[in-house]
Length: 451
Ligand code: PHE
Image 1 (cartoon, rainbow, N blue to C red):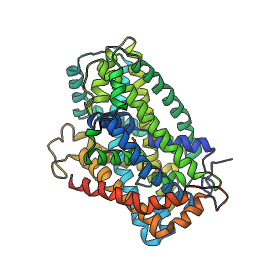
Image 2 (cartoon, helix red, strand yellow; image 1 turned 90 degrees about the horizontal axis):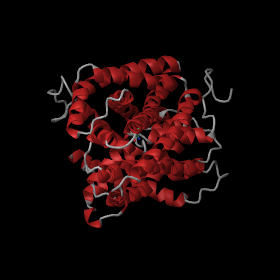
Image 3 (cartoon, helix red, strand yellow; image 1 turned 90 degrees about the vertical axis):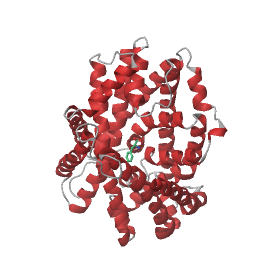
Image 4 (cartoon, protein in one colour; image 1 turned 120 degrees about the vertical axis):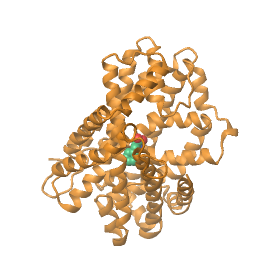
């Protein structure tokens, strides 16, 4: 019994690679496959990629390390972790749990669309080359009253079934299957995409920075993307870190996970953009890229049917390894603090989150006229509150907490396994977490509030 335990002792990851794959699985998601190519498309291609890298170094690695350290030190869920270090900081963890709740409710709706598209791809229903027809098809799916809720339920059940199995037997096992599959599929897609005639324009677009395109908007978009894409700011990595044993090399993990996430984002760009250019589409197609432009691109390719199946399997796996981490944040809290059995907590919470997601789904159809926050419907409100308010606020507070309240000396002690491990960059990291990261995040936060 290496890692399964019902007798009150905390479960642990079965292996080092299991933790890395699970955490990278959390990070790699719709944010990489759908948002990154689109953001790069919108923000000057290579220019965006360059700024993304700068933000990744200043904020991404810094916060990743901070979250994992807090989790492993306390061996508790997001709320319990803050409370254990400073009693009156528990509310910051609560903001994270709340963010997990909200993000999962709409993430699962999109996960449902992906599931529906995988079914379409499997049944050959995506062999349409006309973007207009595909656009109508997508519009019809998401505005329907029942079908998207049905698929939202299926996606939620899949998420639940994995989390139900616990850390080693559920999340780690699923990640160990889905993440390698994801790598293989994305490499196949990249090879296909970059060997299309005319693909070079896409490659050039992704890697040649046009410095004239860099402005404050691009910088801020890149910072926001780092946050969402790395699953930071809501205690997700605190929770995953809490299942680590005391001998894990945290600094190494905090570098590896963002590197995997970034590699997948770049590979997604290499799979999407060359193909998009080769078939004469616009790179900045936005939300429709995955569901409209890409199927059209596949339909024009030899063996496109197989590639479109592979593509939606890829997106589905990426979405699932993220959704399980979102559910785990909430489940871990209820299991730790309310002493409820994991299985009961998982089913009950998944059901509640499913219900909260229903208005988000309906807001594309029958409830499109209902405005919740400004002119935002349910889906956009959930997205705005969680991604634009709760995540940056959570990240900012985490920096203040680790840098100033708990203290970087204690954090460094934990990160270096009480000095047994060499953590060379400790002074540099301390400087980043105390000064650079909070200032950078504060700027994004203020801007996101302005809108
Ligand atoms: N990182 C995930 C993605 O890129 C989304 C996510 C955000 C997951 C926050 C967990 C926590 O899709």
